[in-house]
Image (cartoon, rainbow, N blue to C red; front, side):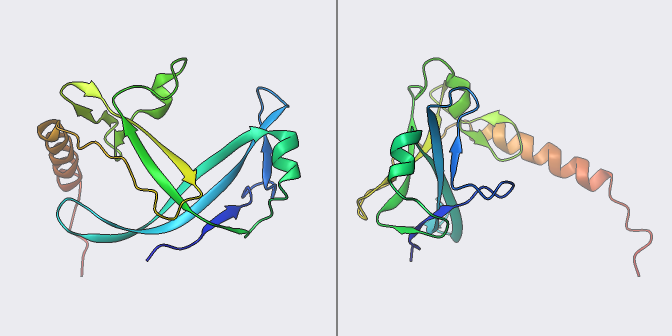
Length: 156
């Protein structure tokens, strides 16, 4: 059901190992995996999940990564009520689609990141958000705004 984890080259430069613009000693490799996921309503979807494998440039280079390389394991989603990055907690906020609304649980923001695990049995750690009414209202207003601005006069 899930594809293998694959190393993906940068679409612009073609580089497999991308150097950090903030510190030339560090960089990352982008990994992707197509996964079969089932939502809370039992609806099955295929999704591409990605993560950045970060490390020192010397270690990333010595590992011999190449575009299209298949790796063992799984890319997992990890959610938490504690920020993963204390210096920049906003970076990992779980945002509901295009609404810009932060998903919350008991009024606390949910943080989300993806990580690569070499274990094929690794599982996602998810927190179900409870600000459903806020999100429904946002989607409803967006939907009615689209409907109000849509003209069907020139059809047919």
